[in-house]
Length: 194
Image (cartoon, rainbow, N blue to C red; front, side, top):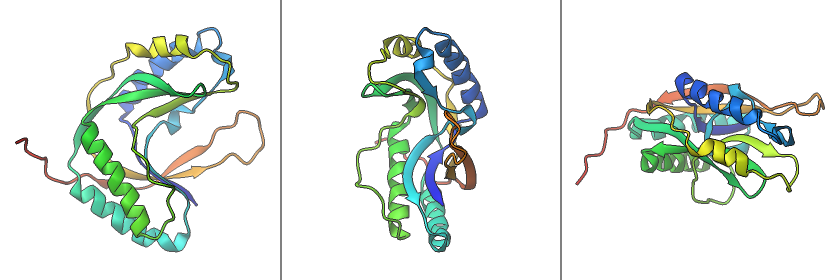
């Protein structure tokens, strides 16, 4: 099965972002973007790809340990950006150090469970909103629409394991479906400054 570790935004955060995306989808050129499915909005921490069923018990133990070591932390969806001229995303603000640490722990948990992970690269928190169908699409109006977005601050309290079910029907525009397989509460002690 195709798996990744993630933070799943709070319903309040999804509703706020949904209002912004509704306005973006009304802009000229919006039909040149393939918009992601709202039920699937998430912050990927560690993408694992295809994982053998036999590795799941050890993966669960190691992800539980990663969550147990990480304290709950505040995050909000904030602004936006793009990767190249293809992907449009909402950004994240708050305790990004704790979010990066959770991403590193999830990546390490997968590796230690025997999952061959891609080359390690610096984590950049984002929530993918859309992908351009063509390179020449001007993303600036969409970036302008995201630039003032300031979502509510919400406490992240869980590390989730999510299954990605890729489209199989061949219908153009069909989206992957995401299914929460498991989750673990963040239980670590908050770090004291200084």
